[in-house]
Length: 304
Length: 321
Image 1 (spheres, chains in turn brown, yellow):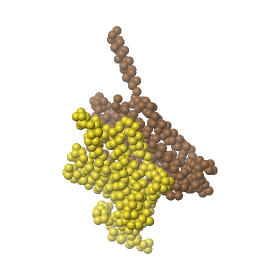
Image 2 (cartoon, one colour):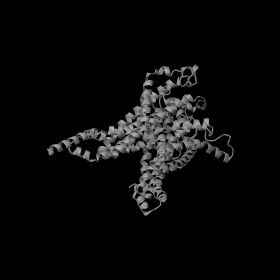
Image 3 (cartoon, each protein chain N blue to C red):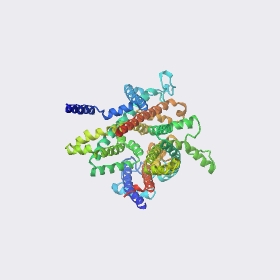
Image 4 (cartoon, chains in turn orange, green):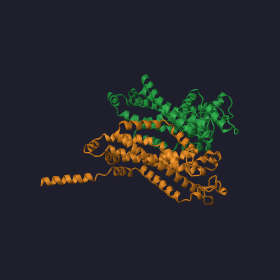
């Protein structure tokens, strides 16, 4: 009888053990009570999804069509909610289209660099040795390049470049930071007991990396992804602002902001460039605050 | 210590070689050749004459030969001729470099003036509203793309309030040495403040966590146990130990500011190297672009070198073996 009770106790114990919330649940529980994080999440998600959907529904040719009669129309006139730009295009529609392009480029660059960084970083951190040494020297070598200048240069000398080549060029210089981060995270995980135990019981290297190591750093991957999206949208907008991002005929938040280089436009027609500037600021801030909140929550999980 | 510095400088040699190879490779990819600005070619020449001139100038030599000749020329200060301005590139860059360097130094100074007090406050009053506010500021600044921040600053303080000049590095009306000096400073204030605000975040966060870490160190506990007054514990034991590594940030800050000069100078139409770079891009002036890329790369390396050397001076534990 005593024994039976004990078994029951162990079983209930095992049951509660298996119901221990997973990493993401813990993080989510913590985030839910973080007001700043929740507000940022709502703003960021609304903007990202809203603009992407809205922008995709617009007809690009129609939005980018110049109409000289509407030049510099003030907000609210003639059905232009945010006014019209120097070519008479509706600022609101242009903002949606440009915002969508900037977001899509930022997200694509982040996904590509995160993927490369995760794969390369995991392999280097797990195996170490000569391979790790060689790859890390390559990373160091990329780190000494003045990235912004070289990206501008490559955009300039690439003939027939478009959004895809732009994404590839930016990605080529964006994977090093993630690689370093992932390598150090995997490196610290790989020396722990559970990995040693797994190795001893004959688990294949691939399974260890894919099923055991990567899930354990998933919260850091999410954080890096989030912060990466904010950074890469900013980078694309910055390049387009300088005139070396998206081709001039493709709407981007950067080209809208670049109108501010004209001393007349910056003072007399703020509605041409200010909405795009504010949009990129709000986007960057809300995404980054949410990313930082995830990082804090993930740290809290590691502490307990 | 000297050994460490020499070792660190030696590490730079392969880095410089790699950098120069990359720039050389990029330069070869660019359209145009050294004749474009020299006027040596005319449309009347036939192909044989052009080939002969190219051969004479060594453009048909194997790439390694060309590379070493290019390096040799650079070491002699010959960076080629500008296509657009028809003058040696080195003169053009020398003209602009001063503006960029002064603006960067001014910004570094302001960066430390802003960042150190904020970092100290945040670390000292960890967990309070002061700390919360400063950390919020640091996160917000790092998230905003720099050029949007510069542009809004220019719009607000330059155009709307009219406190600062909105373009250039010196007023044409300025006459006399003193007037010119003050005009330069006046033109630098707004860009310097804005770019220093952007570059404060790293120092603030580093200083804050340094202070918090040192608060829990054994030497702090010992000092407190001895009965040293709290103010002295903070000033002499915690703060002094946290400030040293911040000095090493100097190199990184300079590197960041010089890299960021492309944006700040274009927003403010400030005639420095960053603006020259973008202008040359727009006028297809490839010799300038090549030289500036090389120069910016070298300055990045120098900044890192400076950081590592300062670090090895202030913290002997991390000297390179």
